Image (cartoon, rainbow, N blue to C red; front, side, top):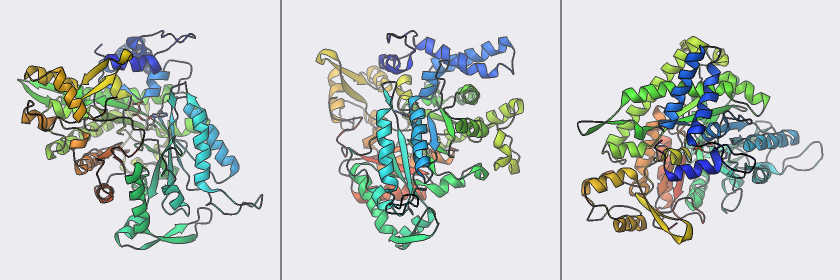
Length: 571
Ligand code: ADP
């Protein structure tokens, strides 16, 4: 198995089954076998024993060849007693003490099992509103978010995976200003990503520099007005300050809600890529695009035949996950089996572009993004239709938009672009659709030894073209880009661009290209240089809005004390 040392370390720490003394009782191959077997078992009633073995082997092969990986909870929990396999959940919060604390309890159960939760706080009455039963006043959404945050802090997942949350408040909620600024100080509400739920009405008011109405969620009555442009400027200012809040376009999420009869979409999962109905869960999986390049007579091409085969198997796999999954609550069981949403996406996109000699920041790359993702979307739907012929459409099909179109799908959605934070480390490729973060970086290992990690595709070219040296790699790590190194050919400098070589425009264009062919949403961080201005942030938000993105998150380098990845710094 072609797995890096770094990947083995991550797997040993969190994924491989352990005995009561904490020693691993399986190796990576054993883990993939366990997962393949548990997931294939969903086919028991449909196929012969021999065919079942073949399905298990197919699943095993595509994971162990690192062509496809399911989200972390599936790798961790399939075939084990916990058996909770989904990464994404959305829970409702009702405007009552019972409702709020019921939701906190449910979130704790989900976090314990490795899932992340998203919530809309928009139904809660604003701060200062009266409480009938006590005669007191309500403390408002932001104060309850802090309670959710504290509960999350206390439930550390298996010692390592701390719970992740998304908190959303509609832009027309009376407490919106408090919400927008609630993470001004980065040490606050650390277990939440927050996003402002933006409406089309609000964006129109920003464009026209008008007032817009705040609505009391209990009565639906107008509770005040604010100037939209001023509110938008505060969102921009806060995002510039430390990356939060992000924004999500609620009306767009609902325009693409395929089961509107079942309810309104009011939130996404923690990283924003999966809009869901209350009590709905979704399992994700990602295809490693870096392994979908073939070389014909020294000319690299996308291997669409291989991609198609993997898409079909991946849809089969993710659909099976729904059946073998053990859901943490009966309501979630009911909703999730009812819509059967799956989220197939990609990782290793930047690596694929490097292999194809296409710069990330080019129209050619954006065009290819559309081509590859539309292929994945259309093949995944065909695969879902084929599954429906055998196993039936999703149970809520009659409440979906597909019944009028007579498209008999087994899954209400099939595509989502996840961040693949850990999956990409396991596969040893660039994460999601993000550009390369660094060409080389220095890792501190035990005894103060320094280890230089070099992007394997770059290393291969550097060795082939004769410009590789440890010293050069160290200097690249310190500088954070290969721009301007005279020993590196111009043609190579052009292809191996990193997140900070790329202007924000290209980040948004790439997100929009993938979004165009993704049923759910796209996880992407638009990286900005430290010197970026508030106007730059404003432009990014506006560009994302105008190009049909479902939301946008920015991060300005160095704008938080603690940042996960550093360039130009020895870690
Ligand atoms: P992975 O690579 O581990 O499969 P991703 O980085 O692709 O995960 O994230 C996908 C989703 O998994 C997130 O949007 C979130 O819903 C969930 N998730 C990620 N990290 C955590 C965490 N620490 N705790 C709970 N859920 C998480």
